[in-house]
Length: 182
Length: 110
Image (cartoon, rainbow over all chains, first blue to last red):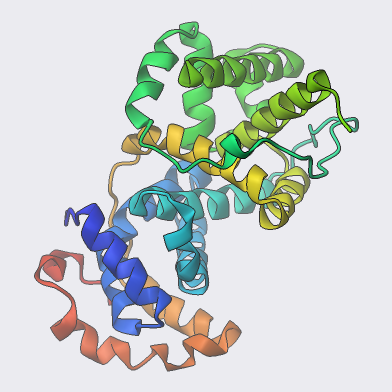
C-alpha cells in the first residue's frame, strides 16, 4: 500500500480545501484503503461500506477547509470523518436506545480556557493508561471504538446487562481522562 | 453563577459525553445532539477533538483494504448531484492517471 506521510496527506487536504479536484483524486488514491477498512470494520457489509466511502469523500470535499483549524493529525482527522459517517449509517440501520440522561442537558456551559488548549500528541500515553484498566473493560473500550459497537452490542458480546456495560465504559473513560491528565 | 462543584460536574459530564461520542456508543439521535453542540460550542468541540487525538492510536487496528474500482467515479457522480461545487469534478477522471503521484499505480481507482 502507498504509505503517504502526514505532510503529504496534509498537503492533499489543503489542495482539496482549495477546490482542487486532482487533489481529491490523489487523496483518494492515498487514503481510501485506510478509510474503506474503517467502513468495513464498522458496517461489516461491503455494499454498505462502499456507500459510506462515497459519502465520506463527499464530506471531505465539503469540509476540508476545517482541517487546518482542527489541530488534528491529517490521517486522524480523515479517520474521524470516516468513523462518524460509518457509525451514523450503522445507527440508522440498526437503531439503539438513547442513553444521554434527561438530566444531562446538552446546553453550553462556561468553561475555563485550558480546555481549549491546543492538542498535543498524546497518542502514546493512551496505551499506558489503557493498561491501568481491567483487561475486559479495556477490551470493551477498544472494540467500541474500532468496530463502532453500541452499548447493547457490547453488553451482548460481554454477556453482561446493558447498564453494567454502560457503567464500565463511563468509568473507564473517566479513568482514562484522569490518567491522561496526570 | 455556577459553584466550583457544579462546574467540576459539568466538566466531567462533558468529558464523558465527548468520550462516548468519540467511542461511538451513542444512538443516532444522541449523536446528532452532540454533533449540533460541537458545531456551536468551541470549548466542547475541543474536548471532543482531544478524545479523538487521545484514542487515535486505536486507528492502527484498521488495516488497509483497497476499495473496488468504480467507487471514485460514484463519488464524482454523487457530488455532482448534490453539491454544485463538485459539478466540475468529472473532468479529473481523464487527467488523474497522469497527475496522481507515483505511489498511486497500484491504487488506481477507476
